[in-house]
Image 1: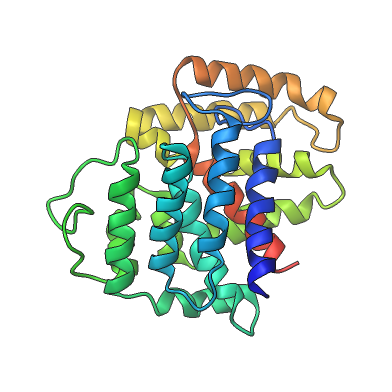
Image 2: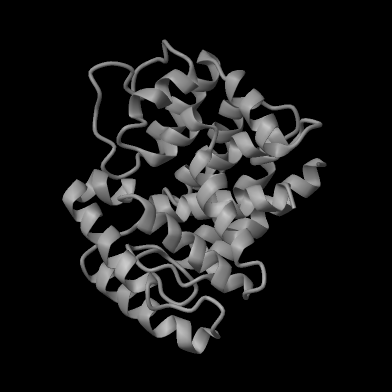
Length: 273
């Protein structure tokens, strides 16, 4: 794909995710957690050129995109999105199917990529990050990026994508989008988001509030999804989603990892239609 195509697919994926009513997360139907849709739109537009920069290292794409996003919002709106989408963008430049190209892209990541990503994470300063005794992002990188992600993969679902070939993105998110090919685009995005929230405890909630809180939200999501018809119009889908949304935000719970994985799924689907 061309640079313009990749940048456009990234931006469209970010905007489509905002169009969906994602319980607990920021969307066009409700702000939350001190952030509004406008912050995410501005960050996506600022980051798109860096994410799609041709023949650029994955780590450099992430670091540059984080800097651009922080420059226009002053907030960490999209670190997880950028960590997921940069390898996909680089893979889309290779002349082979996306998933196979992604395996090659991940295998080529090295210490230089890790150093750039460490700097990006430190700059974004995500909530609940904590400190590590070894290979902390505040220190110089001494291992490759995939090796660094392996250390975090047990607690961080975004890190796990680097060690699994983005299995969750393709096997949960993209698969759900394809299963609902006949539904409204907004409903497909909502279903993909809830599929992640039901599949595992959200890492972002787990980092900030503990695994028990994340597991409780996972169970609430499973009960909610059982009663939703994704082929129904928004007027029928949205009331239960909105109620769950309000409840999560009242408790300060934001399933940010599920939202980031949803953007990556939309992006992956757009890159390999």
